[in-house]
Amino acid sequence: MTRSSRPSPEVGQLLIVGFDGTEMTPQISSLLTRIQPAGVILFARNIKSVEQTWRLLHDCRKCISTPLFTCVDLEGGRVDRFREVLGPAPSAADVYATGDRKLFRKHGQMIGENCRSLGFKVDFAPALDLAFEASRSVMSSRSVSADPKEVVKYARDFLAGLRIAGVLGCGKHFPGLGEGKLDSHHELPVIEKPLKKLWAEDIVPYRFLQPQMPFVMISHAAYPQVTGDKTPASLSRKWISDILRKRIGYRNLIVSDDLEMGGVLSAAPIGQAAVKFVRSGGDLCLVCHREDYIAHAYEELVKTAEKNPKFARRVDESARRVLTFKNKSAKLLRRGKAPSDTTVKRLTRNLWEFSEEVRLRAPNAESITAEPTTAEASADKAGA
Image (cartoon, rainbow, N blue to C red; front, side, top):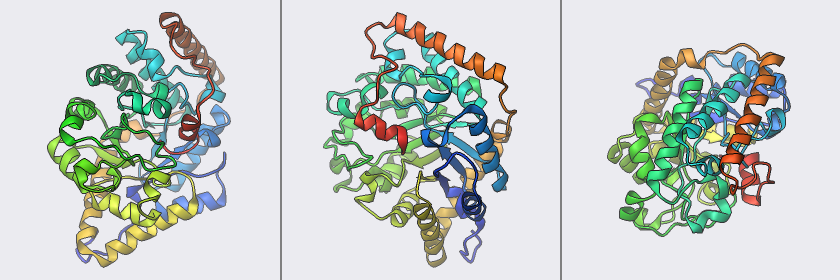
């Protein structure tokens, strides 16, 4: 922003966007060129083959003048965007059940290598939510343990594996969905838990891992005993600025969960949700599907910044943070070479061998080829 608070093209640096289709179209190209988002995110609906995915991300990069966050939400198990092109990857719970920390790191490295080979440089994983009974039907194999120290062990090694592969990871869903009984893709989970207990349980992974997480994703759950109302954490200054930034000391990028989810749209329309997230201290608004929602979010950010100098400064702060992070990560974000057939065969073989090792080491773990539950199917199609 300039001192006169007029919006600059950097407003787009507060958005990561998704879209339909498996190839670049004039409509998508026009949208990306006009908004100049910080990143794009692809889902299973966009991924039909390795070569096609790499080409689509390459075409997205050509529309954007700054280094681009090419993002995917890939945890393994039932949230697996590459299942149809490389084969199924074990879930976090499957790998954790082996008890082998070398396999925890190998899980992150293997998923990271698959991401990088297809052209993705950001993986919105791992989930740090505690595996409490309340959320079992929603989170299932995405959560590894009800013990926060065990979650830290798995996530630390998984994040290290991603780093070895040259991929940026993300802790989610702050401050924690472990006590959430509803799926935030559709409804607003209301978690009645005091801050003292959250701090000693759900928030522990963020406290211990904060220097190692390039991104933290904010949930669309409400915590009335902390905020005094049913405002989602993703729209809460108390959660984002006061607790995550100041009390925990997190210094990297804060991204919303998908602002198209029912859990947040029940609290605010898409444009207002984007403004409230940024006003509360967030950096990157995730809008994963509809072009009209992307446009509304962008236009509301621009309009609010034009009218409100204080908000314009807040936009400028996050835009600078995003661009500084990109500059520091420029080498990692650079486009690589398209994967050869030999590379794809190697990735597929390595993934199969790793999955077999996990299956043999943890025979009581849930089958990696199991069909997604309703909640997990929602996560696999949109949102994070």
